[in-house]
Image (tube, rainbow, N blue to C red):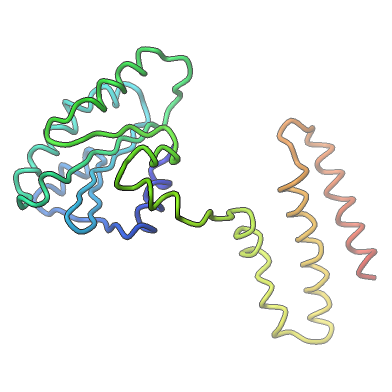
Length: 206
């Protein structure tokens, strides 16, 4: 899981990034971010290696504890540390034990460890918002962004015919990519199918 996945959710839920001049260098060096909504504060960090994650209590905990002292009283019971794991987790029993130990540690703040964005439902104050959020269709948005079909409406004559032909080909290629292509297929077969789609689109337009 990457940190950007959770940041997208934060923004959709109304959280805002908070800067701290006093601890700017410490936060930058550690790679931590602070996100705030009303009186709730979330420290956020992505770990790209197991060794870095296991050192959280040496690297990140002291920084959080220092910043904690500067928050008003109404914030201090609403501080959380979200730890994102972006490395291979397969068949690592010792890591599972370490994660369990982390989530039970509530010194300074409550901790949550994320291996996928769906685990946000494990956070009581975020679960309801996450479940109610509309699912984003990445494939359709990507296709729409490339095709940008509104452009066709401002063109006329031969120019419009040429662009229509291009969009027909592009749409076929994108449909093929999203529905038919498998990473297990040979590259040569993929290239041949691309050519067939192109020829079919040109013949159709003529």
